[in-house]
Length: 167
Image (cartoon, rainbow, N blue to C red; front, top):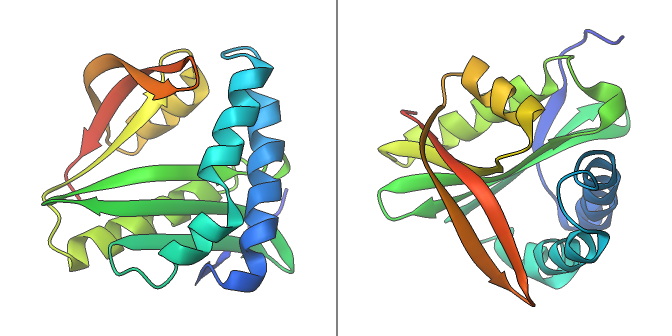
């Protein structure tokens, strides 16, 4: 296990494809027990389209951060300002690099970004069955404030808890 602190950086256009590839690795390790493969494929195609991510890189309402362990992309996070709030939209760490402080480091950099933009709260959605993620978010001070089923189109839904944290 590598205990060195990750190198946190803003996502650059040359790493967008690597982020999408890492998302697929993490999703295939996590979500097949929670949602169908068709939904996984649809959500990955929607949320990790390279053109969409690249368009957000210069948008001041979006923050994309990557965590590197040496030259290896170990994780990434994405947040978006939502009025006076900030939504932690994505936080993923490669299974081989989990439990090494990378997720916490990414969360802290997003919290700093949200604070600098005077966000009143940081919130997220997490699949109700993703007990590992829920436990991790609770460890970092998030609390469940509601549960909902979100229609995401294409005949798919997300059955999520909504969690929040004061940044």
